[in-house]
Length: 329
Image (cartoon, rainbow, N blue to C red; front, side, top):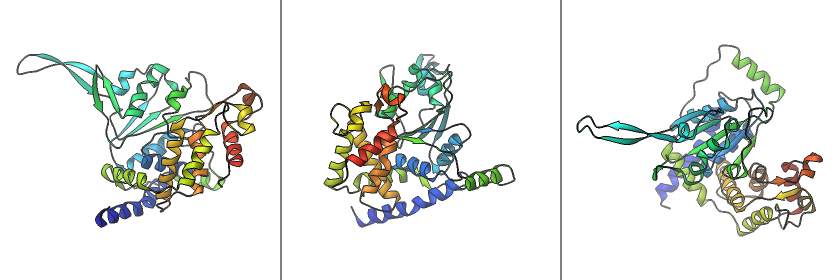
């Protein structure tokens, strides 16, 4: 890289803490979730945000979008939502000069840099599947024609883990397209008190835009250049391979896991670790990046036996056992 490019990258990296500061003007606490959304943004992936009602999931995503000078669209997923409501549809138009009629593709809300798929599990699988090509290929195919999506492109989906009536669980293929599965917890006593003070009085926040689409694209390019040692790469490979019940050397996995993580999980862990390194001001991955991110990377990519549910074993417990059994040498 040229010297000017290095200086430009350094300037962008130095602005990353400012992004957190601007988001914190609206969102109290939830630092881990905000950092993971930033990681998904830099890694060029999508994230699934899960939490009980009232934890400001939608507000968090909207706030992140407002700090970026990029197009933002929100899609409220409902049982009657159709694929065309997301990707768009063709309309019959008429040329006023020639009188000829033709079909014109009208783009749907998916054509934005940041898309909030709110309560994604409230719509049937047919409509959920409309996102598959967009998330993986970053394009939409309609009537045999490809329509490229904006770059950068980030989908942040939310879902409620409690209410099951009228919901449609995401299939494994859909879940695998999400880089990170982020779980929101309740705020601390101090944080909750601050929320009550802010939201019931006259407090108003004035957020500033921190990054443009071009700058985010540059940070994504920089993320891929972050160094990861062969030892850490091999360690990630071992972690992923030992998540599979049929081939794992970890007894806990053999007992409770039916299907483990695929190769995409390894790719996701490498890219996310690189993105976290950038956010922390480093240009090399360290073991902490891996052990921190393996949970949101793998928790939605493991399918457990029925005996795991019977014994109240969840995927996070399985991941913890894998980390213990496969230490970095």
